[in-house]
Image 1 (cartoon, rainbow over the protein chains, first blue to last red):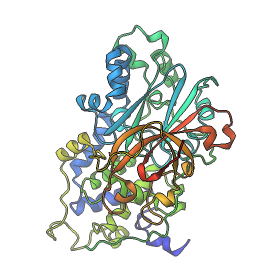
Image 2: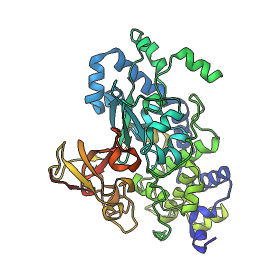
Image 3: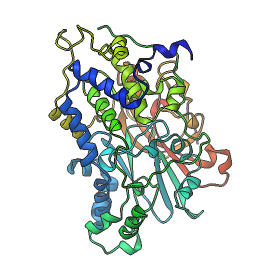
Image 4: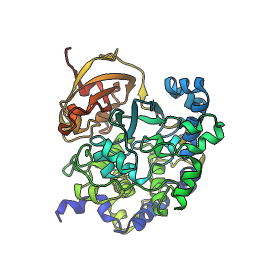
Amino acid sequence: MPHEHHDHPHSLLPPEPELRVKALETILVEKGLVDPEALQLIIDTYQHKIGPQIGARLVARAWADARFKDRLLNDTDTVLAEAELAGRQGEHVVVVENTADTHNLVVCTLCSCYPWPLLGIPPGWYKSDNYRRRAVREPRAVLAEFGLTLPETTRIRVWDSTAEIRYLVLPQCPEQAINLSEDELAQWVTRDSMIGAGLPICPADSTMQKEG
Amino acid sequence: MARVKLPLSAAGRGHDMGGQPGGPVPIDPQGQPVFAQNWQARALAVTVAAGGLGKWTLDESRHARERLPSEDYMAYGYYEKWMAGLATLLVEHGLVTMDELRSGQVAADGAQGVEQDDPVPPTAAQVRAALARGGPSRRPDRTPPRYACGQKVQVLSPDSAARQPGGHTRLPAYAAHQTGVIISHHGSHVLPDSNAHGLGENPEHLYGVCFYANDLWPEQVGSKDEVCLDLWESYLVAVDA
């Protein structure tokens, strides 16, 4: 191992990730640099309060209310500010609409940028090396591996989040769901459908999928 | 404690992986716990809370992760990168010493309240407000935008865009030298290439730029798929129609 490796601060921490976090947390708390109550607040916020159900409500409302959909697409930051959804990692949001001709897919090839206030903390695979490598280059093959085979006539638009603009996909409302209430519609909207990695799913089917 | 900037020697662009060959994406079923393991939640919390000290910017913290030794960058999981980047930032900003990291013990004179300019950690209420407020990167325009929608532009290389040799940039290598079309204008935003190095925000106009997949990727001949990126004005040069 090259000598310079030992000069990196992180190489001084314990090898196991769990102990590494513990060591950092202990030092920061003991030095009075971090408030333990603030740590708990952050964990509670992202573990229990902010998640994809928030984005799903917006999508369902856009499906049910054409005027809201128009505002969500064209005046996004105002809509999100009014709903108090413009927090950390969602300060500047662009909503892109899937249509009969175009399917949108979101990735961040340089790191891990997704709209936290609408989707929650993204799962590990959104930030995985292989998704970052392949989504921009072979989106059709990647989507097919996810079980979503798009017709050749559908244009795929991949959005690589290279700046502080965060992208949310507005999926198409499935035909079977068109006349449902907003509450019912929200049940069809999956987290992955809001980055274009999947389509909305009938709630009965998604329950079966989870149990299966 | 004095601020020490660690050497950039290990900096690479290993994080800039868009378009490289890769294997299966490790997709998980939806509805799983947000954090697969408890330490991941704590890693996120410690990183966000320490960021709340206001000693570094998001751009600087991204750069701290990017300049991990490449073998570590590739071997580490997501939150392991965060912790390693945090360790770097804490040492570089003089908040924690190498000895403290090594021993796990706070130095006798290391507790807060010793120096007048010691940072004060945000309280839970302040963190709650900060998360809800976020940190917008948009700034007032200093100049009129150089490009309008529909303008054809060519992209520089990451090396020529970065303000510092080997420094941070948000220009992915796969877009270098490619020609695309401006499809949106996001206003002026903080320039990461400058801000990550403490050289000021230097806001610039930020544009959505759309590329044809068959221009970017040789095997995508005949494809009508597109790839859109957000790129700062200084990453681009005009191409005459």
